Image (cartoon, rainbow over all chains, first blue to last red; front, side):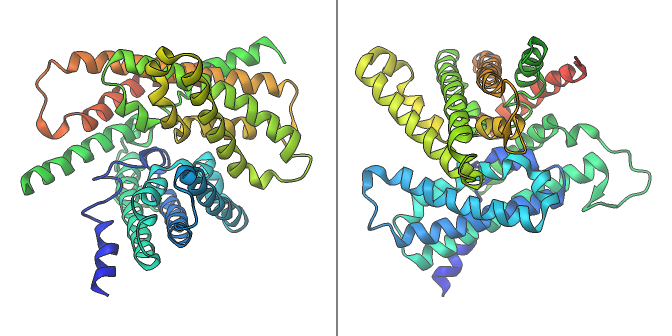
Length: 197
Length: 202
């Protein structure tokens, strides 16, 4: 049990996909305008990660080594399509807000990265917890970034105004604000890493 | 199909909605390969070629396979498979016919498969130039042209960035922001200046 817990926890802090591995930054920056978008994207990616990790670890012995990447991509794309259809049916508003970044989960480096680096070498249960941990780590990172951006850029959190009379810094809601924030956050996490080492 | 539409696509894909600085597609390769101008240029040319070709191929697939058979929900799977196969094929062809060219940008080709810009432009084309599962007039040319323009936008951002980073090599920067973080901060400032194109209207 402890082992599985470790697999789960490593994705959240020690190997956080966004801040430590710097993977999958495209969707992170694009959708983090508001917290609700961030949560939606995080959950969608978690679902895909979980599904693809399980399936790939199940079929890892059947796939020939030379064509493993196309095989992985097909598995991942299947889960992305399921996710797309479900999202279109049950939360069309979120689907419209995330736009092309929903199908683009296919090329999110985190998903293919975990398939290549972890799921094809480990047992099903381990891969399940690895996928779950990575997904939760990704979601938490998204929530952190989108909370900062929504609060400073629009003065709200989840649509609620926190401080009356707060003048929002519009640039944080724009693409350049996202790039600036991720640069500063990565720098901040580097400082923490250097201090620990 | 008219010239104004092409101009709009050009301005919006290259400047206003620049694939990297505004849409954040292909950010990984942008940060990773922009340290020097020469590899950056090679990567950009490879990306431009692949976005153009894949725009054309995915348009054909969407128009003549997915729509007639009511399979548009298979868009993501079919596009990514076709792009991956195409990139693999181009790599093999280049290796066979021109080893120097292969050395110049062969190593970047596998990276392009998972470059979000390529799939991104295919999906964008399908969203923009098909209304209610019907191709708008001239959509084939618009799609192909958008593919070229996205590639151009990528090249522009890549060249600017690599030029800045080459000079930055000579500067002393804080250890914590070296490489990646500083790359993002520079990209942020570039994106801010690209915001100036936002007022363009036709």
